[in-house]
Image (cartoon, rainbow, N blue to C red; front, side):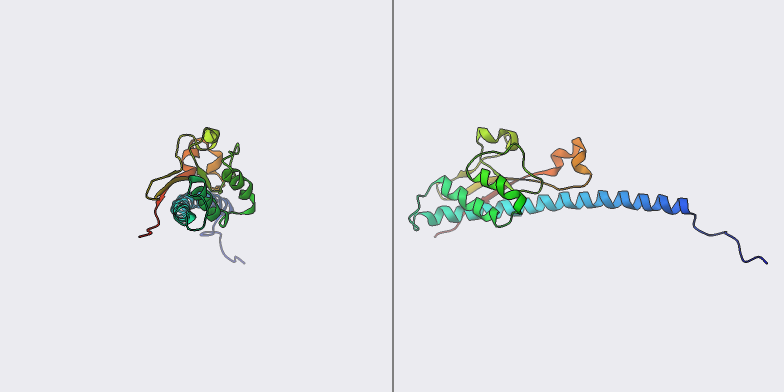
Length: 172
């Protein structure tokens, strides 16, 4: 008695190839999504940190705190501290004292001040500056946490987001 043939059945090797192809495209898609999300997040965080710094600058004299660049810089650091994970806090603390770690964990925010001590981390990408009207200019560095792209040397420049933040608190 003949029950049927194997004609039309999906072979196991074909299914394995399909599973591998879907896994590769899934990982590449995930890494691409994470990289884009990191850049968008860094852009948003840079703007908000600049606004927090400008706010600290403008409210410093009314609070009895000296109105200087360090007051504004600490305002930006305080904003970022509220968004960081525990693994990022030591680097952010070093950043708040203008020290520079040898490396920054991926996904952690870091404000470039333009100091020579930050050359290994920030290079010449930016500096922290305040205009006389209280407008703050800063550069925030963040690196994407990827599965595969971080192991490919040629991708490094795409994984690090250098986002500029410019903000001013309108006091008038």
